[in-house]
Image (cartoon, rainbow, N blue to C red; front, side):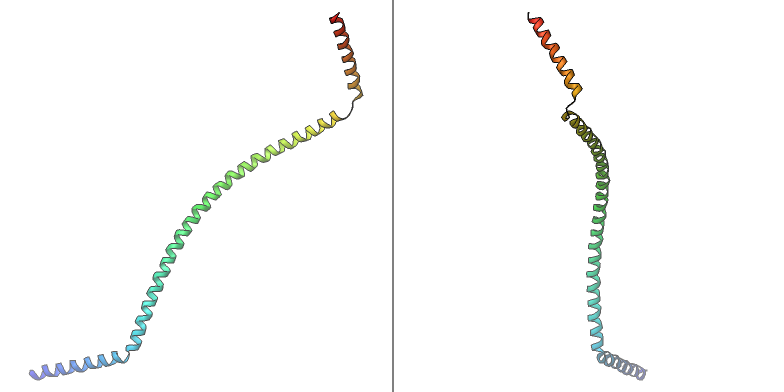
Length: 130
């Protein structure tokens, strides 16, 4: 029985030595893989931080875009109203120009009527004074 125990201990030691030897032999590969895993985890964390930041910016841009679209709708309504007022002002300007044209042209009929009116007024003033 002691023979089996000793044999088991020797075989365990032999297996442990083989595992240690193979692990020690590939130690550079394992350390490089660990470094690469650490770098990959760091990159993953930084990318996750960037994704979170970009998501927050995207939400902010969506809110601002919505606000700007609402303001754009309001400004479109204002521009439409101003367009209506512009049309009315343009018509009024045309009418004013036409009226100004008529006022600047001498009208013989009007002058005769004004002269007869002024003569009538002079006569009335003379008659009322005396």
